[in-house]
Length: 357
Image (cartoon, rainbow, N blue to C red):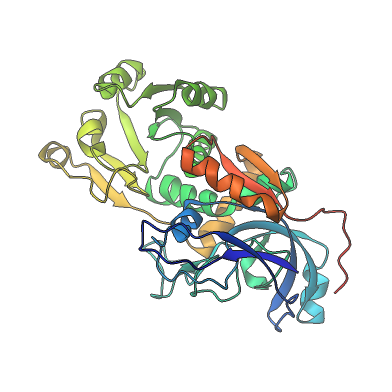
């Protein structure tokens, strides 16, 4: 079978940019607890870009990239698993080592799929993968292959940030920053599905317009120095404050939003693209504002996220799709330029193909 890995070249972390390399691997044989999944589509995450720059721990040049994927189960390690799963379209849980504890992974060995030594041979940028049967979920029937492939890691991260950590509920006002990325878009969709009024920020007027078409109430351009004052004018008079902020940028987010948040409001940080700090201010302290870190999520949260997507008929937003493993580099270039609004997906196989193992 075909797979895509990184090709090792000389260079220091942050300066190097490893080429992609197509390689041939044997079709896997399932262990008794595993199924073999024929990958239909896979999606790019920032982790994969960081691996190419050697800015992610444990980079491995023999492990296929990507941690998001959807596929058809074509074989299983036992007759029982075969009866349960064969022929079903499934999404893969994108990480391992975290079962259900809402506080964080139960072990110190949590890892996500693709491109690192922490989960050997597991990545979705290959035609087939052997995967634990306990770590797959039925793909929601209303999703296309590309939508299902786009869901796992961003959906899980957004669910934990918005629902588990942000406690977003109906009637609240919620700010989601940096709209356009996969996590931010899922967070916006999940908050709206819970009945919240969602506000967004972006540096692109086009992205703000698209977000409003998808259900955001209003948006402001964070390149404007006093964007928080503009946002204050947009809040409803009946509830002129934010209940929660779901943020992936860091930087001055506490300073910018503490005046907008209610007493006891929540800032959830799932990333810090503007730098590795987000200073906490005395103003936020005096308002009893809580800042909560959030990253990825548990196996239980993944199942709950898929149920929410299924029950509310949510469609992940797709930015660009390329066909075939040979065209994956195009997705990386789009991500590097910051042109995407939604997820970047590659179709790997035709669902109509009948695999013979």
